Structures are given as C-alpha cells and as structure tokens.
Amino acid sequence: MSQINREDMLELTRRMTLKRNCFGRIAGAYLDKDGFVDGTFNKNFRKLSAADQQRNLDIAKAIPFSETNVKLKEYRFQKEDERPGSAWQMLMALRECELKNDALLDVFYEVVGEHYRASGDYAVYFFYGSYDVPLKASDRESLWDSEEVFRFLVCAICSVYGDYEPGEPECGFLFPAFKDRGTDIHGIEVFDADEHNPHRELLEEILFQP
Image 1 (cartoon, helix red, strand yellow):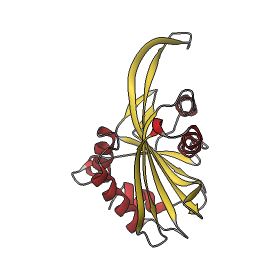
Image 2 (cartoon, rainbow, N blue to C red; image 1 turned 120 degrees about the vertical axis):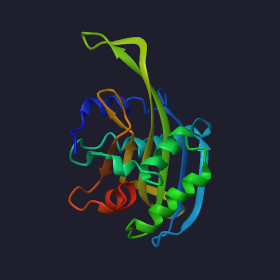
Image 3 (spheres, rainbow, N blue to C red; image 1 turned 135 degrees about the horizontal axis):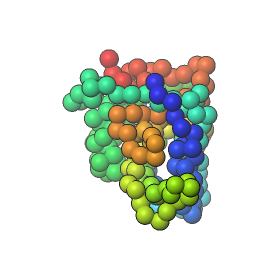
C-alpha cells in the first residue's frame, strides 16, 4: 500500500464544483439489499440541472476529499491482477469508453450485486472526469500549459432511502490513482467511510478478485 499525497487529492476536488466541473458523464444502478438491480441510468453530466449537478458533485467529491491514508488508501495492481477478465481490465475499458458502454457497466453492477454486503437498498454511482493538469513553475505557481490530461473514474456506493434518495457514500474508489500529479494506471485509491469496519469485499472480491 502506497501513501497518498493530500495535495494531489485537494487539487482534484477543486475541479469538482459547478464552475469548474471536470465531469462529463454519470452512470449508475439502484440495487436492493440482495444485490438485484432495480434500475440503471446513464447521462451527460452537463445536461443535468444545476441542483442535480451539485447533488452529484457532493457524492463524487466525498471520495477524494476524505481523510487521506485513513479513509482513503492507495492499493497497487500486480501483473496477475491485470489479467484478461479482471476488474482492472474492466475499469480500463470503462475509462476508455467514458462510461458510454452500458453492457460493460451492467457487468460491473452484477459483480457488485453478487459480492457487496449491504444492510438495505443501495446505489452504485460512476462518474467519468478529465482534468488538464497544469504545469507548475519552480516556485509552485501554476503555468497555463497543460502537462497531461488525467482521465479518471470515481465510483461511490451509497445507501438509498425513499424514492432513490442517496445517503453519503459508504465506500468507493478513484481510478486510476492520481499520483505525483499524474496518471498511475497500476494504482487505485479506495475509500471506506468507516475505517474500523471497512467493506473488505470491495477490495478482496470486487476490485482484487481471487
């Protein structure tokens, strides 16, 4: 497990506002406590109302803004974790298609439904974002030129109440890892709201399949 630089995460969250929104797409599924999918959605993020954008930005932002190296921890994919049919391969494909492949998303929801241990109904939210990482001068001030484009996914799993109203994220992840202000496709930053009772199944059965 590697250490996460808090400044990297804060740099990302500054792009998760209405004025500086980095997200282009949102997709998700609603599941019952037994893991059966009740419904799915897939939308252009920028076509949502301002209120819906803000509501979803709050969900997505909770992952990188969480307590670094306590509630948000970085894990490494080894060569065997990146084999064909792996979760890593699926996440790379979802990132490449910018969440526009519903069939691939359905496979991920089914994997979550099979393994996730929920006490009630819940939702899986996926966000696709891109961030033009600016160059930094020697005095740490940003320059106008872009160093690279960080293309990423945020996933948040939340309990839902009433008419599919989500609570705060219980767990989730940022993929690929944002490390040293750049893309690390062999890393993933995993969030657990309750670090004392984590959803180990997210790591051990969904992301890092035995």
